[in-house]
Amino acid sequence: MMRVEPRASLVAPFKMALCGLSAVFFPSDCRLCRTPLVSLWRLPVCSECLDSLQPLRIAQCILCGERLTGAQLLVGNGQCNGCAEYPPEFDRAVSYSEYQDGLRDLIHLLKYDAVLPAAKPLGKLLAQAIAELHLPDAEAAALVPVPLHSSKRRERRFNQAELIARAAVKYLPANFTVDTKVLIRHRETRSQVGLDREARIRNMSGAFKVVAPERIQGRTLIVVDDVMTTGTTVSECARVLKHGGAANVFAATVARTLKAADGPVIRQEIEGEEAEARQLVSA
Ligand SMILES: [Zn+2]
Ligand SMILES: [Zn+2]
Picture 1 (cartoon, rainbow, N blue to C red):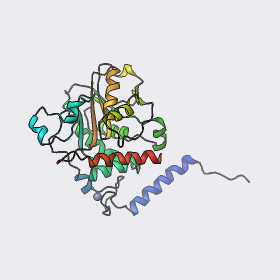
Picture 2: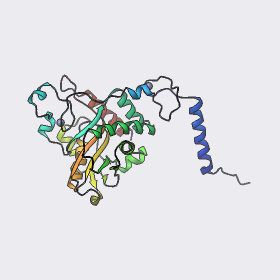
Picture 3: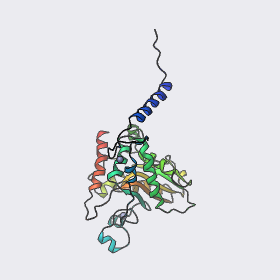
């Protein structure tokens, strides 16, 4: 006798309803602070943890957003040593806050644990960072998420930068859009861990390619990523987009690593890139 297979299209919604029910009856703990969640919410993060995410309030480089330390503040052109030595390709980079604590955990939840609803609050924070660019009201700007290489995209099944960008435009004026059709990553890059600036630039060089130049002629673009560590990635995206005809290219990330306030030790940067390296190793 022929076995009757349940039709997937009928089973899937039923399964989803069951998952929904289990969330109703067994709300999980907050994935950031482990406090049991009392309310029902698709994102397993408590409101206290979300409210604890605060924007940066430090003196920052006017170009890349790096922390300015004592001597640089005294010299006073507003740029960090890195930008003075090697001006970045983007016009300016903004980030909501530092890549640490709850913000880092929330990004990891999206990126490594595939908790996709985390993109919504991250997008809201990105929109706040983009507002700091103070673009003219009438200016139409396209958010260009940093693309993943197709093999990485297949493995992760989503591009966190794209999800964050799509969430962000809901909090921005209607003249902000997302464009995922203009830029591709056509070469895989190795981990940037332990590379000096020149090696990082060599590593990224030629990684990205504009595939639809007609979409960006004379336009204002904002390269979007979850985290900015050294800035090499967004700078390389900006370089090829400008070369392809864009008029202005900014960069916006939810988080960025910062030099320690008291010296050149970049603990967070190493940590951030180690997480990337782990992903590459496990890939
Ligand atoms: Zn919490
Ligand atoms: Zn700088």
